[in-house]
Length: 187
Image (cartoon, rainbow, N blue to C red):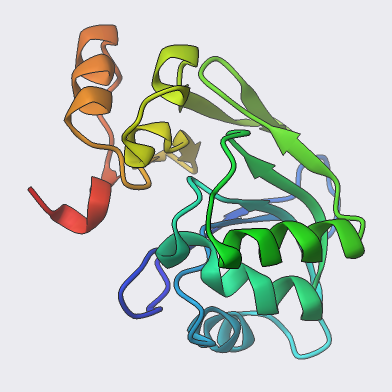
């Protein structure tokens, strides 16, 4: 589900439970800017008593993608925080890092070739590669995630720019039903 968070990105993927288990696994991709909208949107989807998110993924450390995580982390328990390992350089990023440490949230670095397995479902991390992770262009460090559920596939691209798009095209990716266009559809 794509969340309306203003000028920024936030998507919630819900993996169904497998093997007769109750409940599924929730993956929140990005948290939008620091305007409180990500919290409001989660409040519309989740039960008022549900204050737990299984996985939270920051595609890259720009405030329009992680700013909403700061308040969210203070109000929700998070099973694991996934990110590329490329730190941000802003005060807002330092605040996010402080909150993650204070709340003792498990942090997992992901990159090209990694997989997130939930029961029989697998989300594949297509980027960043080691080369992209060192790019001066922070957008090129975005985590790109391919998710396939219930016969529908989606590609979440963060703010991936032309260098990432060319790398993905050269590598050859399967067609997808849903494309979260990189960098909000800008040139």
